[in-house]
Length: 624
Image (cartoon, rainbow, N blue to C red; front, top):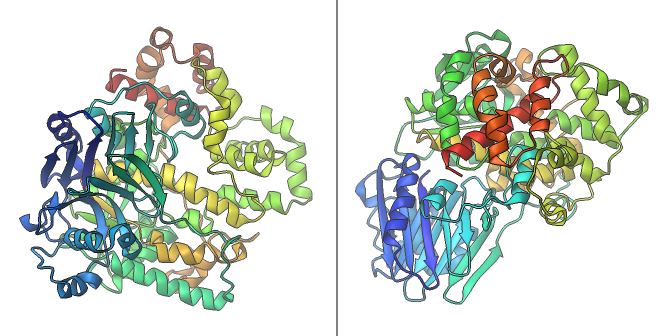
């Protein structure tokens, strides 16, 4: 990956210092080189992490031979070599082996229609100097970020919010985004923490001219309600294997050291198994907790590594290592983001970067194939029987039982309470509730600033326009809300904080287009999640690993809050004095959350306190 930034002014000048400040803010996304283009009312900047053609010939901004077109590009165009001969036949004389140069000439030849030819992850700005027209685009799945600020005088865009801040955008909190953050623990794609900011939606591009800004959609994830693929199950398994194998092979193109994350779960193991078919002695990396064997899956990862004869490295870290790295994680976050597993992804990325520059991951499979506990819960509500109705009927009991993630029994009560709380809601509201950490009542108690409920509902509607009559509707919503807003954001932030490029084979659009339109029964039933994925690649796994429950990363937040981070919370970030002076939160609600941390009924207080800690750290860092 790299970093891009740009300004298109409809009147003002003085762009040089702004674009240079933006690029400086994106240094870790591209530590190898940087460059700028400034002419009249347009400025473009780029900071480079060299992956394909690491020579100076691949540096950006990239100009065509005439000097009339310029491109800044972040990401990878995996099938770029498919078009090189075509362009040579047109008379193009390439100066590099980079995918950027191929993309530049495709855009010159086809305009925005060139986008349909691309397979990859990308964000770019393409400027036609003579027409004064700029295209700003984000890839189909939202793997590569683009944040945007606009007002009547200009539009500014960049790979990260910190670059917009460096360019001097007004930093007034968007109250609806704030309310959404404290429900979800992140801010979805169609919003930004500051007024007049947002993330460009995946599959869209902006066309900016002196006349103004147009937004166009060039791709939508297909929905089975509109496009149905009715291949029989065995045919679907065969086709899935072909598509995913081709996707992995495409993502092995690099002129720098490359490897795979290997957690021991089925997703990363499948990616590893496929990649090993095309690469001898593939580098693989896992991280395990030296002081918590329950969450240490390095043994499973090593079994897979031996199975595919990879060059495996198992990093052993302790809870203290995670704790010591907190400031690095929180300092990089430029918009409140409280998925605590970002702490583990940050340290894994840092360790992996010491060995390779590119890593393949299994991200996207849970949303695409139905991998979460909540998916099983949704299915059970859709097919409710006596057990499900009984759980819902005992809702008052679950409310008073001790709930936390710290023991098996208390976690069971937590899950029962969560199930019962969503059972009687409408399909759309149940989906939103189970995607959230806090509900609307909690947010209204917590926040002092007023927010517009109608505007909040309008923003939510982007993700809740489905009937949720089938599990495919739930997965479709997850692909837009959870995957784009949380999972891909986490991976991009933490990998780029360490100058590591992460590639996601499950999100090749050919794979997504096919799997999204298969019957949901191929993905989940009463007995199995990710059914077709497990069965398609059953030959990759020893029997003891195929159906084991994945533990994942568990960050010991509660322990830290009551010990190592106690002073930071009690006397600094969440102290009554600071909270009252700040004027954003009702301290009574915060005090209740802090008290619950010391009780037997912690519930969701840990996640809510972490969201507050992240926000307060962010608030102080940016001097708001």
